[in-house]
Every structure is written in C-alpha cells, then in structure tokens.
Image (tube, rainbow, N blue to C red; front, side, top):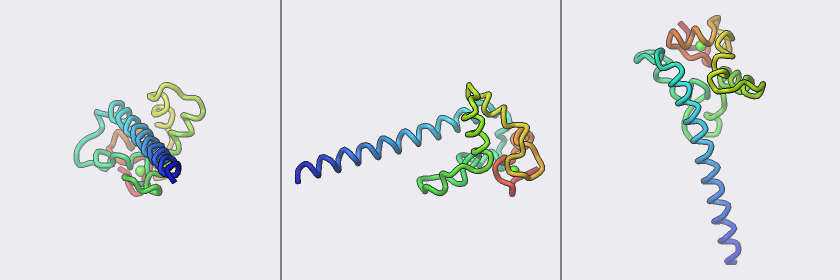
Length: 122
Ligand SMILES: [Ca+2]
C-alpha cells in the first residue's frame, strides 16, 4: 500500500514537471516572438491582444486550445526543417500565407493582424 502512495507521488511530480516544461517552452517562444516583432505590437490591434493565440488555437490549460494554428504549424515545420536560431524560424515563414487570407504572415504581423487566423486580416 505504501508503495502505491510513493508511485502516485512520483507520477504526480512527473506530471507537474512536464506541465512546467511545456508552459516554459510556450512562454519562451512567445517572448522571442514579442522581442523580434516588438515594433509591430501596437495596442488596439488583433496581434497585440493575441498572446498565445498568435501560434495556438487558444490559451490556457485546455489541451485543444494549446493546439497550433496554421501559423504555429508553419513555424514548427520550419524548425523541423532545421532552421536555427529561432529568429530564422520566424523569418522563414514571413513570405507564406499560413491562414490563406490573401496576406503574407510577415505583412499581417507588420499590420497588426494574426497570421494564423483567417478571420483576422488587414
Ligand atoms: Ca490572418
């Protein structure tokens, strides 16, 4: 019985650690995005208020909301293709129109709209 409690405690600690690592990774990517595109994060634009939703469907702990949107998936593909460092990953997808709204990702970012949301465009 005591062994089960120890096992549960170890599993719980592992889950908490995994959640913290995921949250830190997301936060780190968001900070890098905000640093690179700081000049375009202008109040009263979709992009300014997007936060996690620049790359994800939603925000918060809901697993479905953490799924990547079209722009986030483009960034992941660039990363998987070996683009380094992180700035190169963002620049690699600027010419694309990930959400197919007729405006490139880079242009959307410069104009304050969300590159992964077809409902958000200039
Ligand atoms: Ca868009």
